[in-house]
Length: 200
Image 1 (cartoon, rainbow, N blue to C red):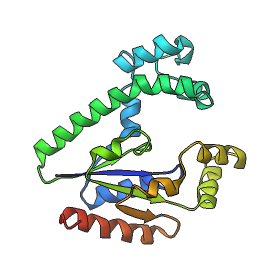
Image 2 (image 1 turned 180 degrees about the vertical axis):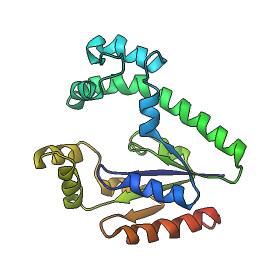
Image 3 (image 1 turned 90 degrees about the vertical axis):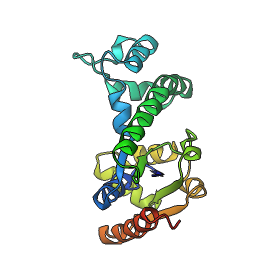
């Protein structure tokens, strides 16, 4: 077994790269997916959020209104810390459970942990290797604008994260995702070959 932490900045194409690794034979633990699962109605993190932020962050069906909650915490570091204190332990515990299940089924597994805040949360210290997906700032802005954000909103979201060059400093491998799909795939294949043969 080898556990890889995969991260990048917003709109760097991290999810695309994750999918490439899965196609090549890796197992994926997507922390964004886990973060949605642990706040489903009735679960411990859901109860913590309602206690902290009130029922106004709920939709009619009792699910968390992620947009509303996002607006509350986006420009408020104190409230964001409160949210992270509630959700992070639940996500980490669920991820650990998934690792155990995968290893039980396949002791030789290559496991990719796709974690947006890999460096910020310190998870990079718990994995065997770190891969950072990188894209030029103007490419990130273009991708976010294609999703409907204004240029100003796009830059605000990019600037709210630690700069990509700081993340790259922690990387064992960097995938440059500015070019064609084929160029990115080639980099992913090369890294996967190294990881799966344990010749790091």
